[in-house]
Each structure stands twice: as C-alpha cells, then as structure tokens.
Amino acid sequence: MDALHRLAKRALIPCPQTLRATGFCTAEAYDFSALLPLLQRSFVLLPYIADDVYHVRLIAPEDGGVDLTSGAFHDAEAFIFRDGTLATWGASEEANEAILALVKAAEINSYRAPETEWFHYGVDMEQTGGLTADTILIGDNGLPATQSRLAYSSGLARSVKLASLEEMLDSHLEKNRHIPQVLLQGRKIPLTRAQVLQNLGELFSLRGHLNLHSELLDSPDFCWSSQKMEDIFERISRNLDVRPRIAVFNKKLDYANELTEVIRNHLHTQHSTTLEWAIIILIMIEVGFQIFHTYEGWDREGGGGTLPAGATRKAVGGATGGGGTMIGTIPSDFLADDAVEEHAPKQPTSTAALSAARLAKLNAQSRRDLDDDRKSGRD
Image 1 (tube, rainbow, N blue to C red):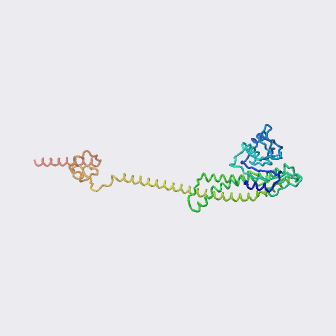
Image 2 (tube, rainbow, N blue to C red; image 1 turned 135 degrees about the horizontal axis):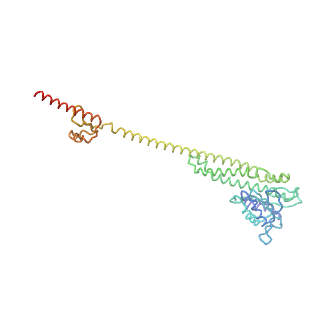
Image 3 (cartoon, rainbow, N blue to C red; image 1 turned 60 degrees about the vertical axis):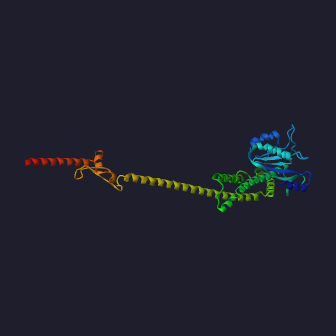
C-alpha cells in the first residue's frame, strides 16, 4: 500500500492506541537452525506455539540499543514462519528494519525486495474481537490474545507469500510480453533454446511453490487444534482475497506455460530443419566427389585403348607378311619410315613378333639355299 493510503487509514482511525500489524515476505524460506541463535541473542524468545513458527518479544538488549517498542505498549512481538515470512505486532519502523536485517542472515534464496501487507489493530479485551474492514480488534473471542495474533499473522503471511509469487510471475509475463506479437508477424523468435528452458524452469518453480512446497492451499496445522483459530484464519484470508488470487495466479501460469511450450516446439522444429538441410548438403557433397572419382577412373582406363585422330600404328621391319615389330601409338605425320626403322630396336617386342622374325629369317635362308642348288644344277 502506498503512503497516501496509509495516511488515509490513520485519518479514519484516530484512536491513539491503534497500532499496526505488518506482514513481510523476504525469501523462499528461512533456515531455522541458523535463525534460532540469532533470535536468542537479540530478542526474548517466547514459548513455542507451533513447530514451524518462532515467537519473539521485540525487546532491546539490556546493554542498550534501538527501542523496539511502540507508543505506550511494551509488548511488541513477531511471529517468524519457516516459509520466509514474518509478521510483527506493535513494532516501530526501526523495529521492523532491525528484525528484517536479522533474519537476512538465515534467508534461503532471498527475494529482490520484501513484499509487505499491513493492518491497523487495537487491543480491547472487554469487546468481542474480530476483523472490520482494514482494522483488527484483539478482544474477547474465547482465545488468548497470543493465539488470535498467531491466526491473524498466518493469514498475513499467506497473503504476502502469494504476493511475492504474483510479482515473480508478472515479471516473467512482462519479459515475454512481445513474443505473441513476434509470432503474429512471422518474425524470428529472439530467444535461444537455453533461454526457453530457463523460462520453463521459472514456471515450474512458481507452480511448485504454490501447489507443493507451501501451505497456500491448506490451513496451517495449528488450525486443527482450534476451530476458533481456523475461523480467524479463514476470515482474514477472505478479506485479503487469497483464494480468488490463487485461481487467477493459476490461470496466468497456464497461459505462460502454453506460450513457452509453443516457443519450445517452434525452436525444436527449426533445429530439426537445420539438421536435415545439413545432412542433405553433406550427401550432395559426397555424391559430387563420387562422380568426380568415377569419371577420373574412366579416363585412366580408356586413355591407351582409343587412337587419337591422326595416329597410326607402324610395323617395324622389312619382312613381307607382317613380320615387323609394332610401335605404340605414334602420329604418322611426325614419324617417317626411316625413323621407324631407326628406332625400332629400342621398342619392346612381343612374343608373336619374335616368332615372325625367326620365321622370316628361316624363309630367307631357305631361299638362299634354293638359289644355291639351282646354280649348282646349271653348272
């Protein structure tokens, strides 16, 4: 509530004995084992009322310090709950600042700024206690004053805890407020997969704190032992609209979850499409290399079997009947007959060529013998 609202409240309730009950939510939880010695050194620890609550009287240490009482009343006190909330009764601003600084050392996952909610209250044990508008009357309602304050404190703590969760959810929604417009315009979503997973984690954490890890949906355990305390708790919860706020909170949470799932699915589809295109490009590159190597192999295998234009094969040797040695593929324009004969001995000869050469030699020898015989006959 703003300062103007506070001034208006004070103007409507001019009674000098009207004090203030204030609820705070500063962290996700308090470490009670670390908090207990801090409270014992600074304040008077009162008898336990419930297992998850510390009850202290806000009295300054004997060696001097801040006056933690308010006005003529000297029973300023505080109820500190395990879920990171506390409520002070009749404490001054200095007292509230002092106890907030004290519990800070035992906070688990501190919030950026504490959430507050407060009521005016008065004490008159000759009247029937109750809640009227924004004013609490601690009176004769069949309960000790301490138990009545505890019941009202639980309602205040429940409201400020819910207000902290509402603030975190509103911040999340504001951070992603532009996403639907981006989707509407068909533009690229300015979020990475890591950021989307972080958003999902935030939403699951909020839902868990509301529905699993706190008593926002249930009555405190001490209400089971006293129907009157439960009635007080329910009365202040209705005054603070706790149940309607929880319903609205869950609807906002459902919307935020749906939006985040849409973004996550969209990014997953984009990632899958990118991988598919990468695979297709790699396959195309592999096919290109395979085609290149195939054509290169064909060129090597067919290079010596096909005669280029203007190339002939020359037979080396003068034997009739093809008894010469074959030269490889040589252009006929650049190789004369005498050059063929000159270079013939340097070319490699095949088995068939050698046999033909021997046969030619025998034929020549036979012809010479035949000529010699003819000459001898004439003589």
